[in-house]
Image (cartoon, rainbow, N blue to C red; front, side):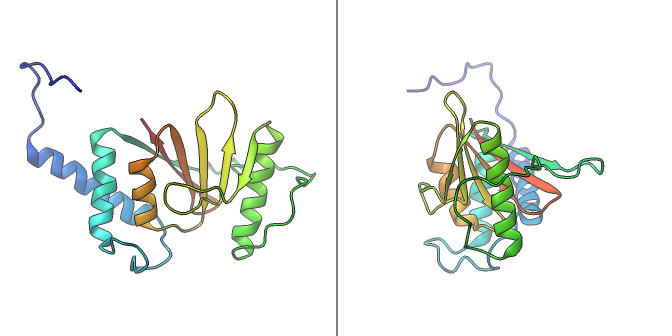
Length: 177
């Protein structure tokens, strides 16, 4: 059981908390590409509600977010590997999605990580799971995702990093605290 804060602790005013939640919702709306404008295949289909739930996780400190933009001097986020992994070719998704998955997979394999394709999450699957003893699990989504899947996994899973790769120029990292 958590101990209540000392009597000297001042909780922020509700309107300040609400402002921060709205700021995070706007950031999510602008930053995350989803499969569709509707969450039609999820048990909760209200996108605004799902973004609010994710924003509350962020504002409460359960999840930390980082948006990483590629500097113009950097050719790619991923190490260029001339040798392909011994894994079979990836067959799901469009060309950019497949090529990016292979490039990311090779990047982490070359650094001594174990990489699993389409690992199971609490809800659904990620595109790649990257594992190494003593490190947080890294679960990677390439391209689009859904707000329901993102919220459900951020809410239920512990001790992991959820990396979304929406483009060649930006990464979005969610870290469970």
